[in-house]
Image (tube, rainbow, N blue to C red; front, side):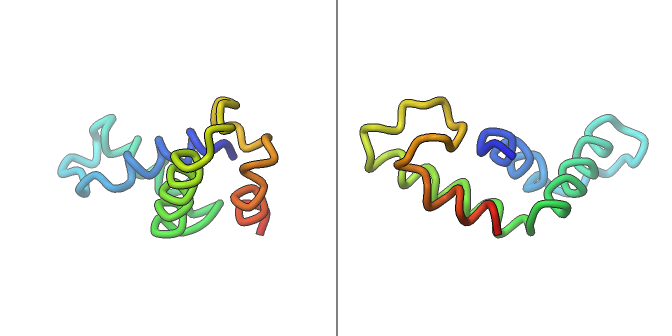
Length: 82
């Protein structure tokens, strides 16, 4: 899963519980939680996004579009492969 997708899911999942279970926002919120749960917990996903952002801000070589394929992002890729 690409870090940008994880970032999107974390942003959606951190929103307050939607009031109307028939709304599009509720379905999006539930699907974000379900997709994250199949990958890792919400706190872990948030930590991965923060770690990636910290790595990216300290390494000038991270110009590869957040796809985690560059050698400078190898540590985060290994975490994601657990």
